[in-house]
Length: 445
Image (cartoon, rainbow, N blue to C red; front, side, top):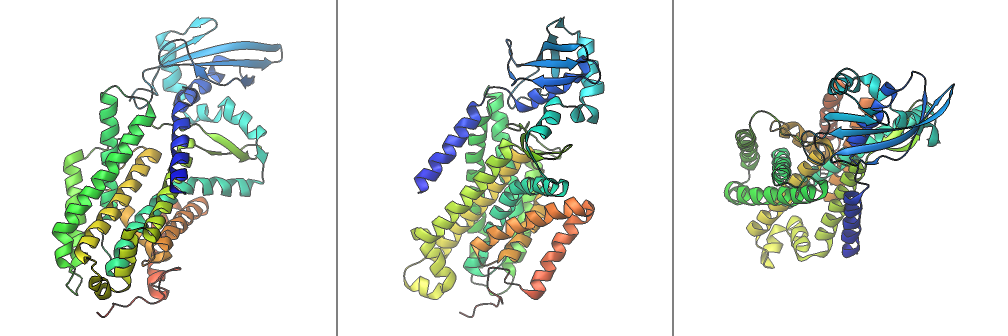
């Protein structure tokens, strides 16, 4: 079963990497230039974009419908780069069947039209797509769009919440700092992608795969060292020294990331972001991107593998035995210090994977974003069940859904306050969460 899942994911990645050879963002920019090159009120019927005759070019053939009849036209857009290159969205040339536009015309077209909301609203493909898909009532279409937008964040929150649950389930203590490990993984992925671009690899698939591997390895190795040096020596203490140490660890890690990255953010251009129309109304199209689906599928696959790891492997049996009774587990030969180090490395690796997913979906992470991200993941862990890994994964889905619903219907500036109020509510009424223990009490050993 595990082998089939891995083969399916590899096939999806390969198909996404092969594609048609046209960058979605470049195709969108080229489409949006079409109305500006034709008369007002014209109707357009576009063919599928395909690579142009030159390097970094996109060719679109289309029909223009006017009161005088229908004409066939072509447009070829040339860009400064492709893939992960920084200039892939910069339009440097346009050629039609009448010839090439001047450099000044291209500059003014991009500066004063393509970079305005008017260009996005007049996208011929988007307007035509709303009429081709399944028609839904406006509230239902809007709700479906918000649900699709919440899926990538649900994968990110779920993996981070599982990191908290892995540690709490083992030693019954909350350890902070997983948000910073997510930022560490995101920065490692960004650096790896940047190095692959500098080495001449601009196609997305190799950069993303290498970024994924490096991010998880960086998170796991940093977590292994931090756990062995800072946390394991305090496991036998009864107080909250571990919480204090992990707070200090998160502050130190955030400063370490600031010094390594600098105060300015590092971002990668979006890839596989072609909008796929699913449903809509007369004037609204419900869309999703291949990258959003890939991020969601990767998070779901990682969650499934984590559940299998805990249920069917020697490590999982040792983790469950120690979580249930540390003394009995020690009598059967389980070394608690080694087990905790491995669990901490696994938890930080999952957090780093969440950081990689943030880079893949949103383009990057900032060194200061770990605190808010970690707190929201902690809320997800508490809501789902801080002692349950499966419950924490479900909590990530719940928090993402709450954020999406609040953003759709209520003031977005109050969204984070509402999420933190939810944490207080659960700590008071049901500290064990929806799927965890109803009452959390320290174990007497």
